Length: 232
Image (cartoon, helix red, strand yellow):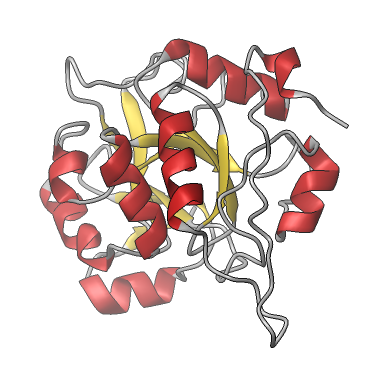
């Protein structure tokens, strides 16, 4: 089993958060479990959680050491930036500059759409998390528990899918444990409700360019926002 000590992260004692009720369904995380997740994130540790798309691994976005631990856990190349989850538009605006095209696309939030936008000067984002780039991928997830987690942590979360780099994305808590070991704290059992990664658009200029197909189709994006997406 992978041990968090290898990534510089102390190993939190796993909270039993895969309990089942009488019907066999996974119970929602308890208050104590949510409190534990917030405490770990504030301390710069890694937490796994389901989102509206896939299972994610997250750390606070403003600390280099936290981002380094996440890169190490995933064996992720350092030139591949992490995406950042925000709780609301105020948090997004504090990190990136939003042009008119992005403003229209942001009407699809909360949702399975990541927008790559110009990074604001002085934004509280780790250069490690962002791979030293002048742009940043941001998203507001359509998942109440994750947005609550971000609000309570007090900073955006730098995130990546719950998998070793280059491997299939983990879609349930049991596989998460088999992949990363029992010392990784995960907020909730069961499966991620979406099952498909977010669509990624580069909106650093006036046009929207497709970087990755995902949970929202290009046709749906254009139909709902009037923004044409360049796919070539």
